[in-house]
Amino acid sequence: MLVNNMRLTRKILFLVICLLFIDSHLSHLRSYESRAKAAFLVDHATGQTLYGKNEDLRIYPASMSKLMTLYILFETLDEGIISLDEKFIVSMNAYQREGSTIYAELSTMISVENLIKGIVVSSGNDACVVVAEALAGSEENFAMQMNLIAKDMGLLNTNFTNSTGLHNKNHFSSPRDLVQLATRLLDDFPQFYKYFSETSFTWNNIIQYNRNNLLRMDLGVDGLKTGHTIQSGYGIIVSSKRDNGRIIAFVSGLDSNDERTSEILKLLNYSYRGFKSYQILKKDQLIEKVKVWKGKKENVSLIVDEDINLLLDIPARRGIRLEYLYKEPIIAPINKGDKLGEVHIIYPNSETIEVPLVAGEDVKKKNAFINMIDAIRHFIL
Image 1 (cartoon, rainbow, N blue to C red):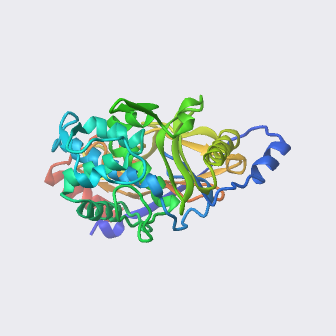
Image 2 (image 1 turned 180 degrees about the vertical axis):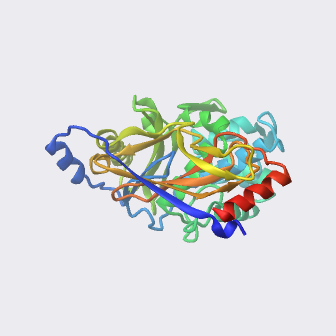
Image 3 (image 1 turned 135 degrees about the vertical axis):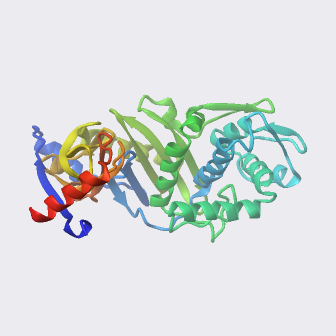
């Protein structure tokens, strides 16, 4: 009965961030256009799109496909099924695999940790096949597993036929999907992300250097992966620390390694010059006191349980609308951290960002007799 009398409360706050800016700087930002066939720039924390060009275009991901191979390997490690010290054998299939290699010798054993380094740094196709065969019995079975996980992640424009990214017309992805995959790697397995920042790897007395040239520049870039085939052109997806946040940047379809480096630098520079991090909501910030029914307390605090920082460009800084949505009264018992509503952050030319509103404290339930009295009072009033 009470549920029908609950009302949805929406409170709107206009947040204005004031700043001084130079008109010529604004003009520069508006005129930016990547030369890459596809480019995508995203705020890691919120998924906010900072720049997009053909972000849903179907492309050949080349060695950036190896992010999914690594995701499955990290997941298997995280579940305790294997360990970093465990060793996998190099089959004839792996030994003969064309393309980039760690120069693994036939029938030798390689530790999981060295296989990770060989995939991240050397982009070793042989290392990928070793992993695929060890975890799934065959590369074909492993590709099926890659596709199942892609589907579970919501990667709607992705299909894998192998563990390496070697060209196949049915092996494809999109910039948006690859950025989402990189985001999941960062979020799901932070303990393994350190491998992406390694700049060299030695195996079989051969030293190889990470093809991600940005790791050796002072830009805050600490991963992830390059890719190249004749059909795909040169591509790269990187993650860079920004202020108190992180961005993920992607370019593909370029004609050379130098052009790839140049275009990803331009995209990163666009983010550095055009966007600034602002704290919109602070962890444990009190948003509202909401009425409670059947509780030992009359009200419960609505808070956000994490800092919300946004990278904002000049137009967005002029005004942000926050919508607080919740139903009241809320029925006890309530546990601290229970989701009780949402904050919608709305600003120009961007998708709405939804942040949970949670209970700031426990509210225990009253005994049945007192609840009956309160119910009578509620319907009389």
